Length: 252
Image 1 (spheres, helix red, strand yellow):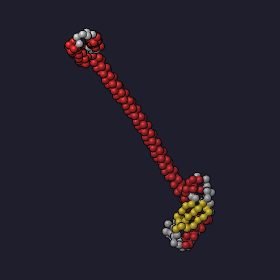
Image 2 (cartoon, rainbow, N blue to C red):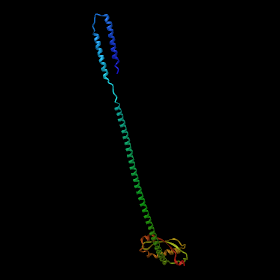
Image 3 (tube, one colour):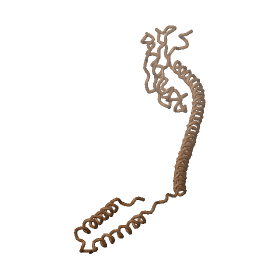
Image 4 (spheres, rainbow, N blue to C red):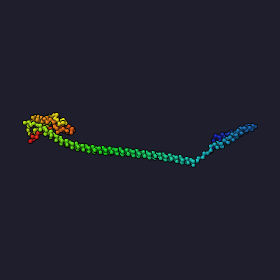
């Protein structure tokens, strides 16, 4: 370690001054031999000489511990690896958690879709069943209605034939009546079979024949065959109906 330059320069300067004083002072004043000044210089030199070692001890050389530095570096690297591993572990755990949550959501959505599909299929099956039952019921009802209408038509024909016979029994043939004459009468009845109105809706072309047919219905006045008839059947067929009047003897 080098000593500071300034004390050395001061020391050299003082030595030079001392040499000059001794050289020139000795020749000019030989009588005086007072040496107070050299003592001061000597004391100053002692102080400088003792201060120099103190300056060297104040700054000891620093020893670098290479092994400790290497261990610290290794510790830091290990800590960095640990942090990286922990980060990777956290990221992996987050990915796995996200995958599990997605799988759970997908499973729940699939189960919900399955339930909805089953409900729709069940509803569709129930709708088909009701439709088949309705179609079967309609078919049975249509068949019953057809049979009922058939029976009703047969009964109506029977009642109509009885009415036709009763009208013909009360008919008085006009002189102008000829074969092939016919007219259509609109007859209105009440449930007891009583006639409340009659009129010609299709003429035969012979007023006397038409009037005789209308008079025959009025003369019959009542058709007892209709008494006790089912009200619906009466309303549907005999509340108001048309009768084609064509006497039997005119067709012979």
